[in-house]
Image: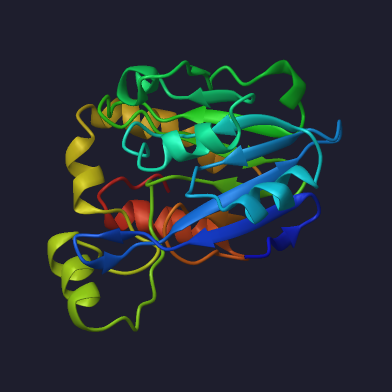
Length: 228
């Protein structure tokens, strides 16, 4: 599987991921910093050729998982890059059982290129949103999904009626239920929306190439978290 370039020094790699018989997929973002070091955001069952392709971009500096529920392939990522620092949200080390450093505050070497915004008020999620400043790209885990609106069968039934997606991009019913402190959650979203981004990489679904800020605002409003 070849890396898909989506901006300068930013690549995307998509993997299959089935959840209760539905096709969720898993998006992996690969970011190369000005230093040449590479950040791998979200883990996957990397094949040896894919590991070599990532390593060819530059020295791999960090592996990142940005939410407590994103542990599905954490151990596979750790095994594929055993010498690389692994960063995650508070509590992630206890979930995966191996050493994990804090994702926030972000490493000093990311200054001016990658920003991290912790989302508060949902302690069982602890999602950390990331912004790739040079390409104006926001990278999320499960904050919103962006599946095919024309999906059919079980995928459509599950996503629309069980997961509660009204439209895409959208926030799942599970994510909404995990928000326990609405005021804190909304306050933590404000710097995300204030950031300069136009592209959105979702953890599951299709890349949003442009107009992402307005689409994210609409998705949040649909979920009951209006910010505008």
